[in-house]
Amino acid sequence: NFFGPALLTKAVVPHMLRAGGGHVVVISSVQGKFGIPHRSSYAASKHAVQGCFESLRAEHHKDGLRFLLFTPGYVATNLSRNAVTADGTPTGQLEKKGISPSACAEQVLAAMCEGQPELYVGGQKEWAALALQR
Image (cartoon, rainbow, N blue to C red):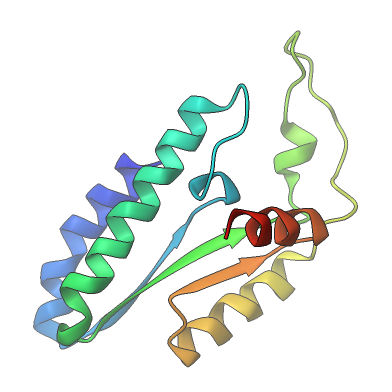
């Protein structure tokens, strides 16, 4: 959750600087804002993503680099269908409450064009958790 985006960004930033700017979209999580029980490793990795990319945003703002931290809620992908239960068997169920991947992509593109630093796409539970955290 952390090293992939961080190392990829480290590799492309010099090219973006030579090009005079660019956008990086990185996927975070509500758990990048606060932890919940039994998810300490995941929450730690997403806190690292938040801290790293918020710092990069501050460091490179004057250089024309933009960093969008994208916090998705449920998106209707095969991720939930391919998830496994505690005993290792696949759930086989698609998250029906999720938004479509194309609607999600449209929101990310709009946020990039508007220069937003963060984008939260999710249901009421995610919004409530973020509001309570603030």
